Every structure is written in C-alpha cells, then in structure tokens.
Length: 523
Image (cartoon, rainbow, N blue to C red; front, side):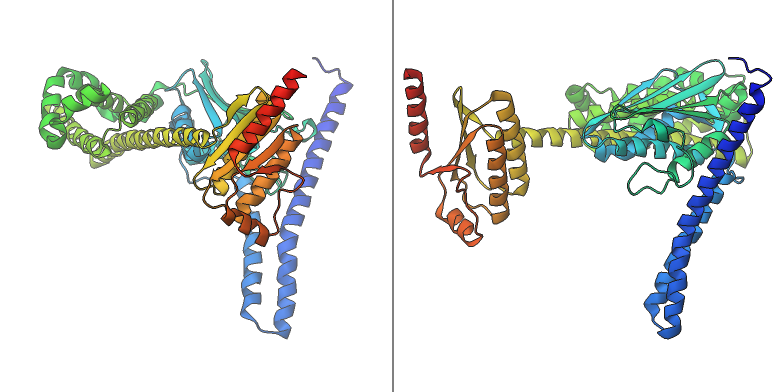
C-alpha cells in the first residue's frame, strides 16, 4: 500500500491522535489508582486530629505504600533497568524452566512444546525476559477456566529467534486488543493492568517485537521475536568452556572422550554405595548410569543447556517409572560432579594452563549452574510423573467407587458402600450425570444399605443430584436407608419426598422394576 502526498499528513494526524488518546488513558489510570489511596490517607489524617488511634496510622501508611507502589510500577515500565547486564540466553531453556512452575495446573491444562531450533541464543537482560515470559505463561493458564491446552513454540531464522505462547482459553474481544499493554487496562476482574504493560516494555527494551492475536472463545497467541546473535563469540560465552574451549591438546569434549575409560573407573571408585546397585538399576529400568553420566558431562562441558534440560526430564521420568531410589541418584550425581572437576583440573595441568581467579570462578559458576539445572529438572520431572500417576490412580479409585451397574437397557443400579464424604459425593454426582447423558437410563436405583453414615451436607448434595437426575429424564429410587441416616434427615428437616421413590431393600425395588419392564414388553 502506498501513501499519496495528501494521505500522509492525515495518517500522521491519526497517529498523533492515537498517541494523545493513550496518554489520556494513562493519565486517567494514574489519577484513579493514586487518587483512591491518597483520599483514604486524607480521611484518616482528619480522624487522627479527633482521635489518636494507632490503627488509623497503620491504614494511612498502607494506603500510601499502595500509591508509591503504583508509581514505582510506572517508573519500571518507562525506563530500562540500567544495572542488569546483557547476557546470551537460550529461550527454550528458560521456557522449559518456567513451565515447571505451573505443575499444579498440569492436571487440567496440557502443555505442548514445539522447539524447532533449541540452542539458539539471543542477547538480552535475562531477569527481565524471565519475568515477562512468566507473566505471559501465567496469563495463558488463567485464561483457561477449565481444561485446555497451551502450546509453546520456538524457531529461528538467519536473522531472528521467534517464540510463541498460545492458549485455547476465553480470548480477548477484538475492540480491546489494541489497548493491551496500556497501563491500568486489564481484561481480568481483579487485574491491575500492569502485567502486560511490563511485558510489552521489556520486549521493546530488549530489541524485540511482540504481536497479539486473539478471538473470543477461541484463545490468544503472543508471538515474540528477537534479533539473533550474529557474533559466534557471544555464543561461546554462553558455553562453559571460556578460554578452555580449544588448546593444543584439543577441546574439553575430545579430552573427556579420549579418557572415557579412566573417567568411568574413577566415577565407580567415588560412588561406593551406587556401584553395587548399577547392575540392579540396569536390570530394573534399563538405565545405564555410567553411559548416562558421560553423556551428561559432555553436555555440560559444551554448554548445551537445552540438551541438559531435556536429558534431565527424560531421566526423571525413567527413574519415576521404575520407582528407583532418589538417594542413589543424588549420590551418583555428586560423584559425577566431583570426578568432572578432577578431570577439569587435570585438563588444565596437561595444557600447562593457569588462568586467573576470575576465569576460574567464572568457569566454576557456569559448570555448577548447568549441573544444578540438571538436578532441578530431574527432580521436577520425577515428581511431576509421580503426581500424575497418583492422580490417575485416584481417578481409577473414584471410578470404582461409583459402580453403575446396568440391569436392563433402561434401568441401572448404583450400590454405594463405605463412607461417603463431600469429595466422594462430588465424584458420584459427576459420574452419574455423565452416565445418564451417555446411556439415557430411565430408572436409577441408588442403594444405600452399604453406607454406614451420611452427614447432613452429603445428604443435601444427594438431594441436589436427584434433582439433576430428574432433569435428565430419569426416575430415582432410594433403597436401604439406615435408621441413623433417617434420624439425621429428620433432625435436619431433609426429605426425598416428591423427588424420589423409597424402598426398604434393593431386592424389592428390582422386583418392581423388572415386573414393570415385563409388563411393558407384554403390552
């Protein structure tokens, strides 16, 4: 599209008006956010003139702190953090780490990752970028009210690295999309409007671009691009080798590969307790501890962060699957760390390399950071797999605790046994309503003869479930009510009258229903 000479001033005018509108909205937001706490402070100062009470001082101080916090957030948005240095960063590693902070949401939200070019670095302020990505991930999880999917992707071209975070949540109205990133504008009920403002500010401060696509009831996608690091020396700075990258005797990788046998012998000598269990671990989980230790060391000395994270996650799942003892893994990793440092020392001696203290501490920091990164993701992966396994087992138990048994194509029995608490009653309600919707049952017999005691709250929930069953076009019959349950219902003024039929025993109800079915077929 080409502008004409006449249209160009008009476009500039539109941009100027848009900027003025944004300034006006920001000013209104500041006035609103700061005026409220200051008005409260003024009121409590007047009260202090009349009554000198400590609580007034505390409330006034709290409100002043709120006003100061708003102004500090605005200052943070408006200018970059000059103290934080620019470093090289692999975005895939950070995204892997940040998603693990939302493990408590994995039972309802599936996270799908498409990392096409891991190990591609950008230059940025690391802490700023981490906070921005965390905010986007948090928004994505919060945008999904029930169950859903978040997709995280990464790719790289010759000039830039691109990532995206996409959810299939509630989405954002089209008219509000243009306002995203404006201070105090939010689509959340209790939001402050500062989270996305921070994200937009950080991305631009780090030479990136951000694009938002959204549709109501479909979801939202944030796409972020950063210029790719062109100078390979910056990539090498991200690796742990530093000046040890290449000497006359070869690289560290070649050194560890050449002395692999010696490394493994020393490792087995260090890990005394694990050494006796290596064959057993291999037999149980098909996990080759020695080969995996060598693989981990090579990833670390080459500075391959993404491979370290991926390997840690795979190892965590393998150990969790076969219920292998974490104490052995921890002892083994500490032995790997000690032997690796011993070989690094020998590498320096063989190359007659004596670096400065600064170089040594920089190397030590990077080596140990990668080893700790492995441990962190290993334990997160291990615990996540175990949690998912426990959750799956609980779901199986819940299914077994709601045994809906078909008697005829139109009649089914729900025999309840044992204690029925609020948690179990919720599971019963969910499965019964879903089952009725799938099978179109006309008559459901709920037998309570195996339930020793039901609290009033559980009975109330059962009555509500019977209402739901009736809405599904199904008639409920209650059998086997115990005297204790009846007494609780009488004292709590609860009844099944007009909601369900009651029979003394399951056999009576079955006989009646089967007779009705027989008569219906005969007719």
